[in-house]
Image (cartoon, rainbow, N blue to C red):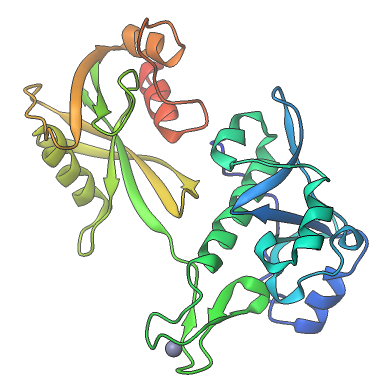
Length: 299
Ligand SMILES: [Zn+2]
């Protein structure tokens, strides 16, 4: 299963609009509450293995009820998240000693899969709330609704729902070789697949073909869907594809792609497994890693 997927929580859309049910669950001693500071979740553990540090409601007193986001429920326990910015400094200091806040992207490889998926949901939602405090239609201040699953504008009555940015990410292949590139913004040793955001008015397949042509000048033939992955940095949904190309003649967009190379399967496997001197490939928690690995294994 792809990292960031496999969230075990039942999001209970029918119950999160019920304020009294949410309030009761929020104060239930069994409930699990995750604080995030500047979108970094609270963790316990060490540099070998981390756990998400959920807190009981009493440890978070006074609970910032309006800022608590209901994530869902599993095994009879409700899960919530909140942004530490909702607390005063004294309350922030009391919580800060109960674990360490760490950036989720760096912590991801050290977390159990289900906890990573829950933390990703919490990070995505607290990030979205923090950046949507004003109505995009009329400019008035907005407020959380439905236990944090939306924001409401009291002025023009528009409901705002969390947005995702769909991004296509594709492994370009030419018979028995695949194309790995280095983005001009990346470190000189890092190579990965091509990727780009889907633009208004195009299908996913059209976005794949456009990005491949823009970045490396190839016309993709068959485009085959692989899998998708939530990527809350800040709000992407990665949509993985294989894109087959008949030509191998590259014309790079030098503003975006610093270099690109065709790799045979053995060389791609070496890159993924850290056996290529001076070069590294995408980390195991990224869908790019799975795209390359799947192609190497012939699946
Ligand atoms: Zn408004």
